[in-house]
Figure 1: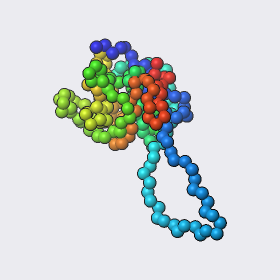
Figure 2: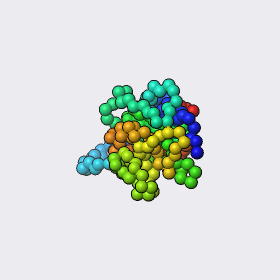
Figure 3: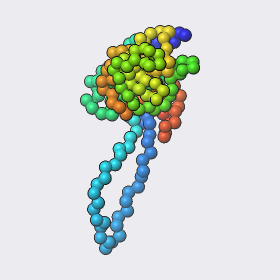
Figure 4: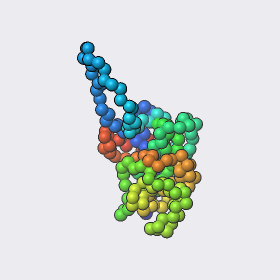
Length: 213
């Protein structure tokens, strides 16, 4: 089944203008009241480590891509981003584009292959649960280099021959060189946000991107 000639969109995602929230997380509010007069302060208690809470994902900058991303092509430039920071990957199935953000700055973008028909690529927010540089599918007996697993039933991001007319069985296929770059900086637990170009509720709405069309 032909998939079209080009993957549209410069920065995959839900590309908002720099500085706008993408996913909002509700935080508790309110401050402790001051102790009444003449009441001694409570005895200090040992500090207890708190589980970190994810804050909102904010796009701070996107790559200056001024043309559609063709199948098999990708862009990668880390010079605009800090050397470290939270990694978030976004996939827009409608635009057929993946983007990689570090600390809110887009550092990579590529055209993708996706699943169709009875084996569509699922939408949602998925943590990377497994990494295998030399993975071979035990279902399809096919090489899936630089595999980063997203679901228990095998959906993953992995290197593929990204060409017109190709599809996957639900995975997100990216050029091998792009897959390797992402594999080397991604960690288990890093979030991958997959949308189909429509509004998706995750706390507050996550909206489809203006740059995806």
